Each structure stands twice: as structure tokens, then as C-alpha cells.
Image 1: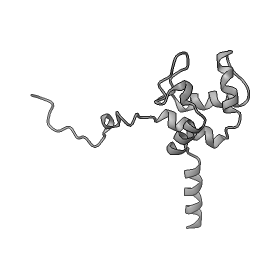
Image 2: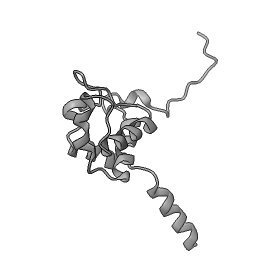
Image 3: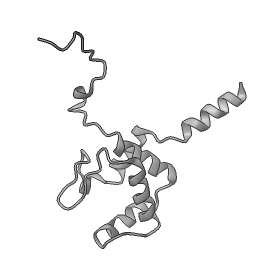
Length: 118
């Protein structure tokens, strides 16, 4: 039983938390450049629903003070103090982001019945 509990605890810690990522996104003021809905603003890219692996790769590079161009260098101070868990939480939030206004569009409980004919 203890082994099962330990495995469950480790498994749950290995994945980020959507709510923690949202709090961190707000706390780090990411929305000032990337938008409150992660839509991107001006010359800053959209982050909503991007691949989690790509976002994690970029944040870890910024944390290591590596950027691809001068515009990306401004991300370095924001990423320097992020832990691996912070990056997992942020990337989970960005990857799975659904705007609360449009959330009803993604209602998976809707069941289509019939043969599709008129």
C-alpha cells in the first residue's frame, strides 16, 4: 500500500498544475506582453495552445541566458528564477489554455444522435 501511495505521489508531482501555471503567468506579468488570453500582442508571439515541449525548451534556454535574437533577450530576466516545476506548470497552462468565455464551445458532454441525415 505504501509503495502504491509513493508511486501515485511521484506520478502526480511529475506533471504540472494548470492552476499553478495560471497563477505564475499572472504573477510574472507574462500577460503584459503576451496578452491576458495568451493571444500575443504587437511583436510578441501567441502562447496559447503551443506545444508543451517547445515552450519548455525555450524557457529553459532563456533561463540559461541563451536567446536566438535580440528581441528574445528580454525574456532572460523573466525566466532566470524559474524552477523546473515552474516551467512545467507554465507550459501546461499555455498548452492547455482555453478562454473561459469560449469554454462552452468545448463541451465534450454534447452527444450527437442520429445518422446525420435531414
